[in-house]
Length: 371
Image 1 (tube, one colour):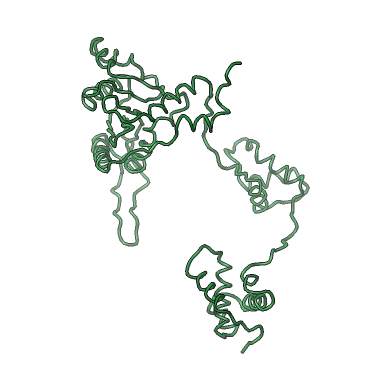
Image 2 (cartoon, one colour):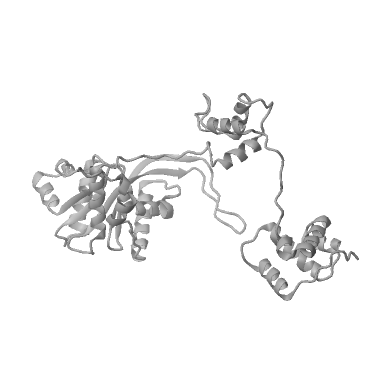
């Protein structure tokens, strides 16, 4: 029996090690060493401990030795490893970073580790550079040239600020059913039908569907959202023109908010979202009747995130539309069911961003006042 470096844990140490095995966030190697110490405390041989813990006898020996010589905390941790010499010099690493921040070669859409390694060889004196070397150096600099994001920088001028604060003040007002705040937007939907019927979920197997599908055109969803009440309405249309927009506004006035004296509508700057759309769709008297009860509040250009309905569009995309919907009839049926369930659940968007916070967080971007 191997009795070199015998382990005799105290009650406190034993309790602590057992707690590490039953809960908490600990590294795999730390948990493994805790298992070794607990097993060694039971007077098992190194071979028995290694077999029980799934480690080597050398690991068991080193863990026991560190416990005897340095204590339990040292036995659980790992000495820093010196590692090998870095292959790339400081100048060569700078060349790699500069290369990764440039456009990829002609004919390639983005940089890859292998492509960077091959291009870097032409700039340094090494005959070869491994993908792993490139990966580690880029990770240190927090560079991922194969990733990209679409973005848009708005012009934070006086017009942007004025539109933003106008919308934020609407959200901050107390609820008033006679003057409701209705957020409005639309989103396109692609109609796709399965060529082959999907296979249902079964024990041990997820739902399976064929990659092949049939395109059946597109449709559009208009979304209404009350900023202060748990109510939304989804209207599916086959087109998205000024006429459809005008009919949505008439339905808002006559069907959804018939008792309101004034409806404040938050919407973006799409070219169809104009009062003139109602004159294109209806006689002048009818258009004027509808517009008397509407007050449009536009979000800033590139500031559609300020429209609360954008949150609801994300919810319907996740909960209802993230699948193949074959035709317009099915789209109407599914979105109506989603709308009814969501309203029944009394779900609301909890808006937290205020004018005060905007002035604090975006103060540097605000236009400076003239002296």
